[in-house]
Image (cartoon, one colour):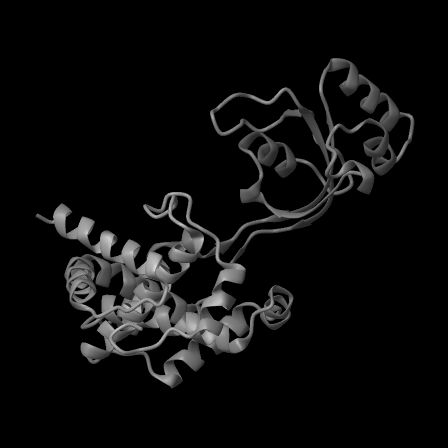
Length: 297
């Protein structure tokens, strides 16, 4: 329990099913069950703090956010079902998110004029990138390039060439089918090559992307451009205006309120009465609070 508010076993075990530890978390070496419980305790603390400050999320606020999520992603319900999650699970997530939002944006107002001004002054933020439907063939050396070019010149389809010569195991069996990708998902060299290639044509050979440590891949890649969807401006309609207003509120609220909210939450955490049925977890939680107290001097 957290200040008398119970975390039920069913809720805990359901969270365990989809919980993914954060690699950079300070708790990463602790039992996963404790990491889950610590997260749930923190969420309870945030909602309780919002309630104590008079900014607890309301049911209409949560339903409005849920409706906005459905509008942004019409496939959300199917995705939830596939993941074994329900609308009530999402409402619980939104309750925690909106409590944080309300705490950070307390006293913050963003007018329609401020929203419209930001939209007009930052056009690059509101542009949907060009998208390309591509096929790809990847080889490892000059001989591979020559074999692919010769086969294409002889009239062989790009799909058959990819099946025969490509070293990309992900796309090879599908005839090099790469799918529809935004230009922002391509490497600089690939993006430049695709951008100057007409529909139905193949790009020049480009080098594969660099790995995380900056080493250049030895792969040589050629794309077939099947469909181009041009970049377009995103209109400032009602949903976009709502999303932009929230973002601007958070930007301003983070500057003004983040430090004070953090202090209030830490004080509430230290003062809270938390009872955990599992003795090992109770001990770990107490030790965690002690470390925080010592760190704060």
